[in-house]
Image 1: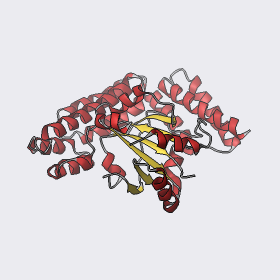
Image 2 (image 1 turned 90 degrees about the horizontal axis):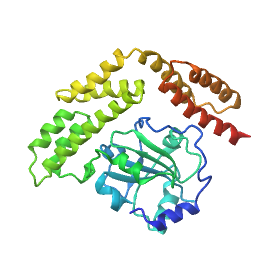
Image 3 (image 1 turned 90 degrees about the vertical axis):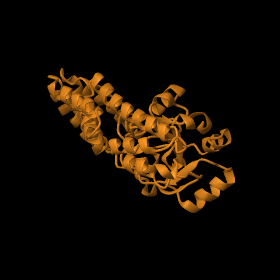
Image 4 (image 1 turned 120 degrees about the vertical axis):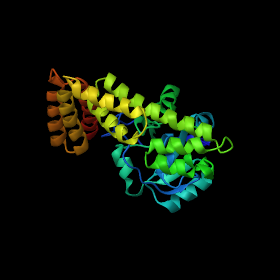
Length: 63
Length: 251
């Protein structure tokens, strides 16, 4: 679950929130093949298992 | 959010390029429950031009980006758009009996996926899975049609050609082929596609040095001024905005 507590924790770790990405991929662009290692807290074994789902990817850092 | 949108087809995943040890300690301490994975080397973050966190990217069921930006910058409308035609249940929650459907889907063999789904019983969610695959096919075709309608001929052509192969054996293949044929027959398309490819090339180069960015801006201005640029001008304008932001940040 994507709780408010989790969001708040992420907000504390914000660096440059709202900063425009330097070379952000524009809406309409196709996602390239995605390789994610160590998938946890999900039944997905690889990113391919998200096929057919809409996916919200949130980049985060522990600090 | 997962509770509200999960059954509508949305999966949420956290991505980090930080180390596993520190991240796992942090996840445990925060009690975070959602899926996460490691973007080793930061390739995905670089692709998306992530300069600050949290940074969110939302892709729809066809793998097309519908939003990229700050964590608070998207609306329910964006999520509704992203989940249109998405599978209500992720593949890993399907019954083991649906293994062949899953395999066919991963290979983008939609006819085989539908044939195999038709063999599944109601107890194994056969009708639901079949309907979901049909919706996925429909949304992919719709994506190609809407690309054509907005004049994104390069996007429409690429999508239609890919779909034409993926829909082999299905009546919808003819729909995909028609979109590809419409692009070919459109008198304006060839020039727009040529300019769209130029914009894409500049985007791929991802210039970072001031001199290179200024050069790219000049090329993009030339594309925008072309009377036959059509949708390429829109794409050029989007890239100009990003490059100008990069220049501003560099000051």
